[in-house]
Length: 423
Image 1: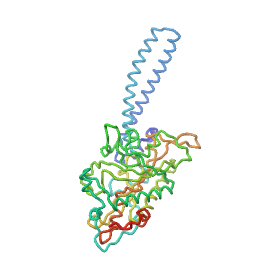
Image 2: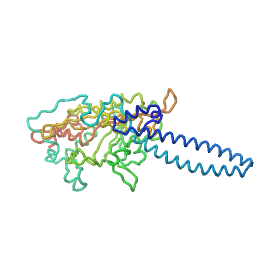
Image 3: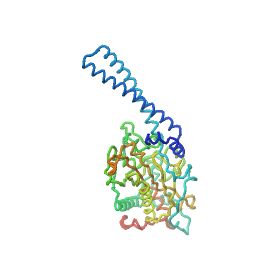
Image 4: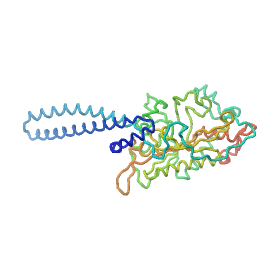
């Protein structure tokens, strides 16, 4: 949620910014209209309350009781009506404010769709094979390490069972990530995967995109779509000491997405599924450090791809492809040589976003500024460490051998109990 003071002072700038995200600029006018209506109602209510308080004091003094009683009765009726009106205006105001996304930073490229995302760099040598590389699904079915048929039998479409070597790879990747991130000052956590409506709304994922979320109405709980949705609300209504920032977390959890609107896309295999495991990085930072922390998250993502020796490219995501909370976002796409009938293509494996104070304002998370002695909103950032299924896909395709086996990346050997080849 944005600062209403910023909207009042720079409405045209906010309109331009949210238009770049494809949002309706008229939302700004509507929220300003509701803001004025809300403040006018508050002023009226406060004025009448003051008169009512004065009248009540006169009652105590036993002066003009009959006239004063009429004033009090009229005031009560007036306040009852105005308070109901204010309640409705505040509700509409909050709903409208919730639909205004965080405007992108100036350096974010304008546009929408893959063609407008900017490739910043490509890193790593693409593997050369003296055979036509297989896609991960064909190879993993032959190796019996990813089973979508039995998963479909028990859970339906877009589920998979990791077996044998694939399960060993996931466990190794988890150990590898936590070893690396704890050395960099991240606090490892394993959170619940069910979240209440208020904190989920606070993270900015319900106003748009609710159709992609699993909801349990009987319990009034949502299943998280990514671990970051649990980390932000951990400090809801709290105040950090300035020296405690940046606070960095690494969270492992299963994640759940309905994949609404993606029918026909990657329906086979485990590239786009309803349930997957993921380790997410999350940072609470001071405002002036957020861009530096964003670059830090990207550097970690790249470091891990280099450790695994998987070729990749980094993209600056354009304004129209940013989610509501993000002002800037980078994606990493891994090279998958078995895709497109062995011709290969890049596919997304990571993202990292700077969300400034959009989430912390909703969740009321602040820090105490030593210089001003005032409590200020923290900034929040998130980044994928590994989405397990997609990294396993990248390993299978890049490390496949002519005889249908898969080599284990050297960086994972210490975590696989001596297994160096999956066969």
